[in-house]
Image 1 (cartoon, helix red, strand yellow):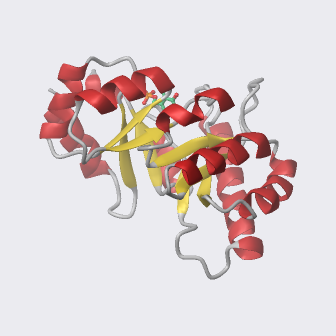
Image 2 (cartoon, rainbow, N blue to C red):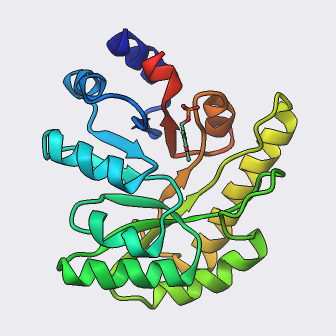
Amino acid sequence: MIKQNLEKIKQQLPSNVQLVVVSKFRPIEQLKEVYESGEREFAENRVQEMVTKYEALPKDINWHLIGHLQTNKVKYIAPFVSLIHSVDSLELAQEISKQALKNNRIIPILLQVHVAQEDSKFGLKPEMVETVCKQIIELPNVKIKGVMGMATFTEDEILIKKEFRQLKGIFDDLKETNFKNEENFNTVSMGMSGDYKLAVEEGSTLVRIGSLVFE
Ligand SMILES: *Cc1c(COP(=O)(O)O)cnc(C)c1O
C-alpha cells in the first residue's frame, strides 16, 4: 500500500517539488516500508519521537522537524537534524545556532509564518518576518533556506490559495531584499495531504505529506 501511495503522489508532483514524508505517530515498521520504497526525507513534529526513530533507522535519512520546537529541546536534535521548518523566534534561532556550533555544524532552517486565519501561537506574523529574518541572518551557525506555513483547515479553496500565495509573496520579498544572490534560499515549504495540489499551483517547492502515504 505505502509503495503504491508514494508512487501515486509522486506522479502528481512536478519534478522541482520535493516530497517530505510526514511519519509522525507512525510505527517504525511503516517507516521502514517508506525507506525501502526509496524515500529519504522524513518529517516528525516531536523531538523525542524523532530521536527514537533516528536511532532505530538507517543513517542516510534526512530528518525534518516540522512541529513547534522548545528551546530546551534543541540540543537533542542538533547533532543530526537536516532542516528545522518551525523557527518562529529569534530566541529559538539563537539556541539552534548555539547547539549547532557545539556540534561543529551549520543547521538549515525555515522561518515559519502564520498565514492561516486560525488562531495559533506558532509562526511569525507576516509583518514581523523581515525584522526577525535580518536578526537571524547574523547568527553564525544557522542558515535560512526559506519559509514554511500552513493554510487554514477549510474546504474553501479560494482562501487556501490566497494564504499560500501570501506565503510565496513573503518568500519572494525576502529573496529580493536579503538573499538576492543566494542559491540556497530556495525553499517554500507548503502543502499537506489535503491541500498540496493547491500549494504546488501557488509555488510550493516542498510538500509535507503524511496521511496520503500511510492510509
Ligand atoms: C501532520 C503535519 C503534516 C502532514 O499532514 P497530513 O495531513 O497527514 O499530510 C504537515 N505539516 C505539518 C506541520 C504537520 O504537523
